[in-house]
Length: 152
Image (tube, rainbow, N blue to C red; front, side):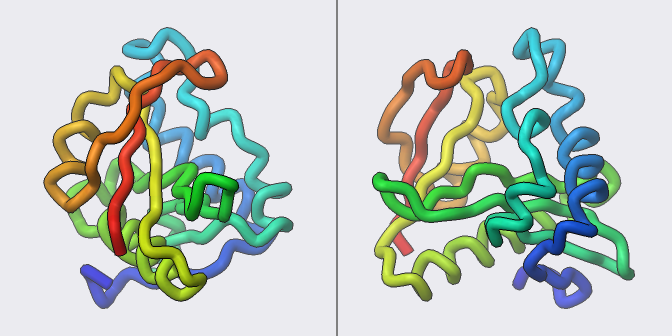
């Protein structure tokens, strides 16, 4: 982990409200830019937690980050990574991504992938900086997405 004060743990259904709130505050600034809520704001976190796909990052007992990850036919997928605005720049997002990379390796994958909205330009600078390589751009689910993969 990047920061010893961050704990990443599997989310329980009881965490769904806190997870959804964290994602909503993290992605709210992009609503106007995209013209609609980003896809992570529309997920059912209780259902995803029940399926074992949601992890939360906690600091001092508070949910400060959310990770949604699972296997797909294309490989190990990071569906959502979010950190609360007050935790930005403190290593929460990086800790969640490192956790996902370890999970992918632990499940026998040699890479993992994710996508970001084409209008989230900050992510298109950040992901390559930490080893993700762009491999596709396409419209999916009504969103223009940029896909990245990283070897682990």
